[in-house]
Length: 163
Image 1 (cartoon, rainbow, N blue to C red):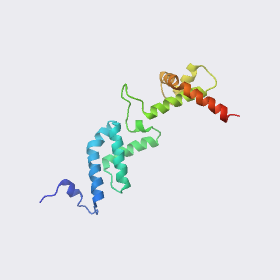
Image 2 (cartoon, rainbow, N blue to C red):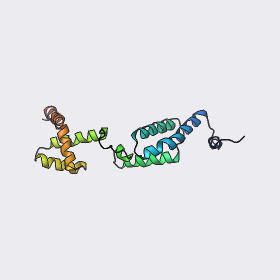
Image 3 (cartoon, rainbow, N blue to C red):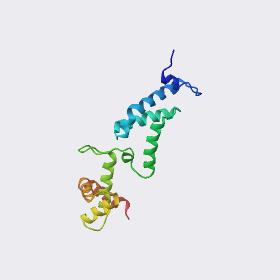
Image 4 (cartoon, rainbow, N blue to C red):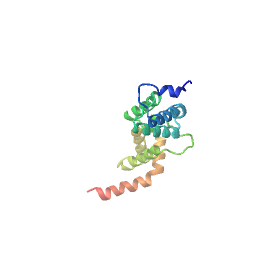
């Protein structure tokens, strides 16, 4: 009786147990189903892939070369300073909701602008745009959206932490 391709892969010198087979098959499915979607920036597929890989690694299973390469490249980009969304190729779809990262960055821009003591709003927005590598319009929109909360935090900091 001929063995299936999956059974043949279990015939090497490794002592396969049921947990190994379980994680191997899950990673094989991840490679075939989730990896192509992940490489195209599908957030849900990336999350599922990360969950499967973390569970497999936690149980001592081996990770497929293609999946390991995809994750290794993304982790190297994060190490170099990219945010996770950019490292995994995730882009906000036109008209889509902001990611947590973009919301936090928007607030950080507004906070930066609010903390500056001198200069007009236009000058502050341009400085923020240069610092955060965004356009002037993006910095201005971030300030419009978040300046009330940023101003409140700056005033609280002055009140409680300034001498």
